[in-house]
Length: 68
Image 1 (tube, one colour):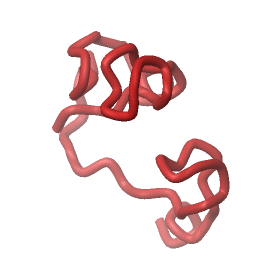
Image 2: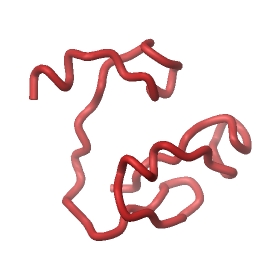
Image 3: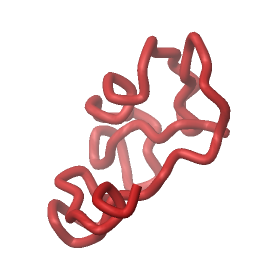
């Protein structure tokens, strides 16, 4: 776990490599929903890879973020 959280994150909200990885604190699920738009995905990796049309910084100006 320490090796995960000590590494720089390419998908960090402040920009690539501008922050560390963070642990997902929700439970394991069969579907993960974006907290901004509500779209559902089968994995967190797929969810966080896509740009979100309803992101608070503007449409497609940020990635989906998992709802806890």
